[in-house]
Image (tube, helix red, strand yellow):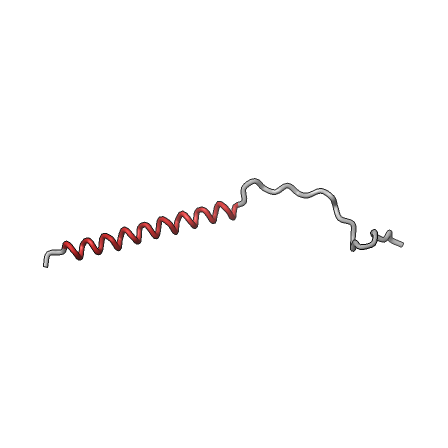
Length: 60
């Protein structure tokens, strides 16, 4: 007959933990996406400003 675990536990668990990786690829991807979105917003704002400038200075 198998040995029963102590009361309150379903099975015996290990006491050590695995080491976490130092850099997570999710963080690097998130930073790249955030940087890309920020550059996209800046480029869009520059394009809109250029269109407004062009319309204001357009000879009628």
